[in-house]
Amino acid sequence: MAGVALATVALCLLGWLAYDYSAVVLRLPVMVTAAMLVVIAARAVALLRGPAPGVEAVAAPHSQPELKDGWPKAVLWLLAVLPAVVLLGYPLGLGLYVLAFVRLHGHGWRTAVAAGLAISGLSYLGFVLLLSVPLPLMPLWMEAP
Picture 1 (cartoon, one colour):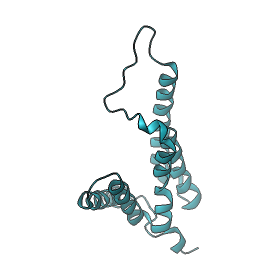
Picture 2 (cartoon, one colour; picture 1 turned 60 degrees about the vertical axis):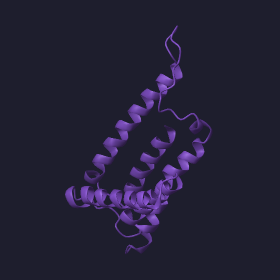
Picture 3 (spheres, one colour; picture 1 turned 90 degrees about the vertical axis):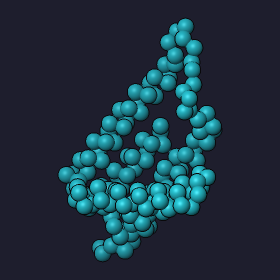
Picture 4 (cartoon, helix red, strand yellow; picture 1 turned 180 degrees about the vertical axis):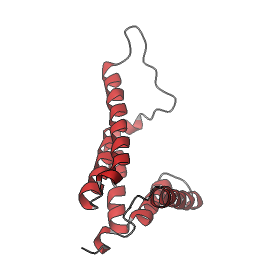
């Protein structure tokens, strides 16, 4: 949960500080981030309180206990999208990030390539074309000062 919170806040800060997005452009990401932080805080409070007295804790069927030991790895995976987007630009960096993530988690090349292309294409279509969000299409280091 901390990794998700850190990654979403970092993405908003990247848009504000590195790409100089206006308040209008940042409105949606900041609102989504704020909502996520509220959900994360509520979940953290529920976890800290534990189960109600007399109720036995039951693991959710989709829980992943091994993630507790590997949380630094999970946080690093979430944060790895930032340098990918800065170094390669939004569509290419995001697509390659998703491809690598899917491939390294045991899926085949077809699935990984399809996921990378789908995420890049859908996010480009949704954000750049439909919502006119000025995403960094070129790598940050290639943009004119």
